[in-house]
Image (cartoon, rainbow, N blue to C red; front, side, top):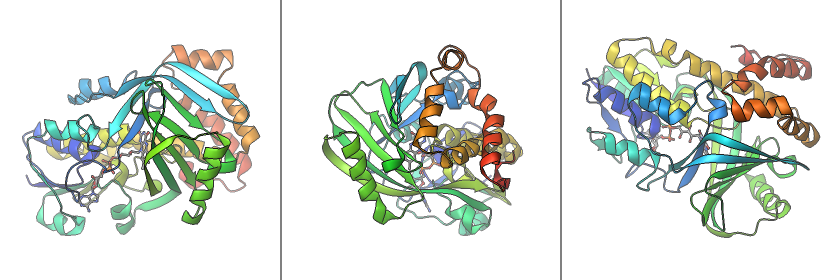
Length: 364
Ligand SMILES: Cc1cc2nc3c(=O)[nH]c(=O)nc-3n(C[C@H](O)[C@H](O)[C@H](O)COP(=O)(O)OP(=O)(O)OC[C@H]3O[C@@H](n4cnc5c(N)ncnc54)[C@H](O)[C@@H]3O)c2cc1C
């Protein structure tokens, strides 16, 4: 069987590994000169978002045999809102290095691969679909789904990031909600090491011309004066695909709409969807059925995005403070309860009450 994979990001690489383990050697096309983004980054895997799974990396190893080493565990997550801060402690998930370093997720996965990656090729899915039995689109963007007319945009955002020097707790990540500079998005600090961190600001629904002003306000209001080594800006489009397979074309990772519209998380879902695409192709299974739980999860998180969109700083602060209430705090720290799943109906009720016209995309 001939399979082409477009994109050597986490979802494409994992798909290739899943195929190889089932005796199929795919052709992998990557437009870059090597795997990984040129600007390094740290992604977070939040356990709270994947419940009832206890440990995402253990899950990937136990179910698919993928061994991925994290940069660190997250033991403290600090949520800043106006005027309160909430600190959550426990085994909260992982920090995952991204980029081109030895320990970046994509480098680790590429090392486990036997097939050769064809670099410097900007592949087109239509041409490959007539040449191969299957094409897996894992390009990290929505362009193929849009072209196939199965894409619906839920959020667009500008992201500005900076690699900064300072003193950081390697097991703590922080998020900043403040509509003055982030609108309905957020700022974050995620450490690479004790001395180096990623400072980022995600601002939805703005023009690029507004980004610098938002960034300057972020730095000023949070009193950040770090030494900046490198900066980047990128535009992100998040949303849904009505389907995840069209004929012999399977969409995985961000290309399949598996990055959520709430906080833009999608590394774990991308990896899972890539693994399931490989499994579906090799074992003749229905890909859309295999990923239906992921699609549901992403849609569920869109309801949280809708709720966030309708809040102001006061409402947001009230919600964040609710996390410290005894019952809820206990559930976050000491149980494996799917809190987002439990909250979902209430969030839906809230969104319906706020929006006179319910959003059909929220139906799951
Ligand atoms: C700034 C930012 C911060 C994020 N933070 C987090 C986080 O903290 N936690 C989290 O879970 N998720 C996070 N995400 C989302 C997460 O990064 C994505 O969900 C994940 O990278 C998706 O993996 P992927 O393999 O689908 O795509 P990518 O990682 O984007 O990989 C796609 C690959 O395809 C290649 N490619 C593209 N087009 C072509 C083509 N035509 N031909 C050949 N090659 C091509 C690209 O060069 C790239 O190597 C973040 C995203 C962004 C943008």
